[in-house]
Amino acid sequence: TALRSVERESINDYIKESESLAGLHKEIRECDSVLDSMESMLRGFQGDLASISAQIKYLQDESLSMNVKLRNRKTAESQLSSF
Image (cartoon, rainbow, N blue to C red; front, side, top):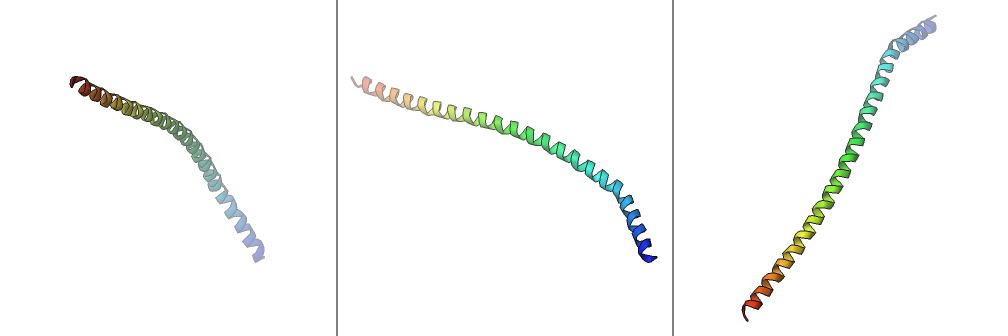
């Protein structure tokens, strides 16, 4: 009957597409693996950037402190030279 014929065609189409679907599934798993690897790498990079940021902050604080000390020394020198 026509219904059986359509059913067989549908089953055959499904069988033909099953290989494509299996390949697609494999590609998706491979992409997931690559994305997991990239995520791990980016987390490491983020940690490195946080460390660098902390070092920059420390250097800025040290620079400000040295600037204040220099200003204070110049003020003291100018006051001492007037004696």
